[in-house]
Length: 293
Length: 58
Image (cartoon, rainbow over the protein chains, first blue to last red):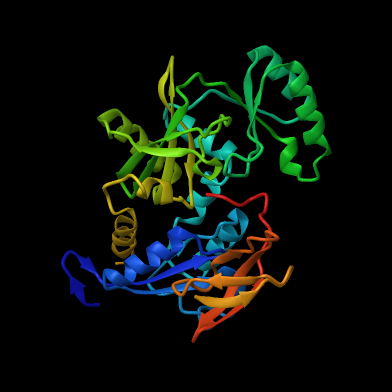
């Protein structure tokens, strides 16, 4: 393929199921940088064990941008079966899409992370919370945008939460992810890690009346300086989950310092782009083009 | 602007020209979400958007 500057031109396919600001930005940036790019609605795809790549053209590389975790995850498995290169890989998507797996991989790779406990039945879940002492944080294993993330202030709330979770039809709701409550300023840090480098870091401040800092919950963004410590932790976290295009979230624990609590697989960067001096979409496209070679 | 009609309450929806297929349009009156199925030549086709799933997010 032709070459412009340092990057070879690629054919970049953006797979989506809902076009957000980020998907438009990535598509427009890819075109602007001279690449071929196309957007494919995942909801229109059907892939069979025997049809090979004949039905679709996924280009040199696929950016998996589905908002539905499971749709993105299993489509990635199919695309990898068809020998397409996908960012992020199935393995990374599986780890990052599941908070339990993320915590295990972070901890195994000695990345500072909040102490987290997994309970596989309602009684032991209650026992663990009692032993830890309240407050604790109860999170669903799969889910995003802070949904169903609950600060459990006392035993009564814990018992109510357990009762509710046991009534929920989703079997994952019966696996309890209980995290130590981290005393932190009313903000967390979101870093965008592309390959082996941090592109940008922002503080996310909670919206008024809200304890969660998610931009999707009205959180506000402010630029965060990238220190050597922050960089080392984030690159370590990225490597622990298999590297790719990731949103590494950290808290400033009053006792432990920086701790990684989440690594996001289909990172949203509208909030970060609003304050960052870096062209995040261009960094992502350049990385995708490099990986396509 | 491209004009469309809310399939739920009938309100006229103004969709900006730079919108693309796959984007979501919300009716300001009734709050229904629609996905742009196709857009071009001053015509837009909408379909009901998927409901937010438990597994949606980053």
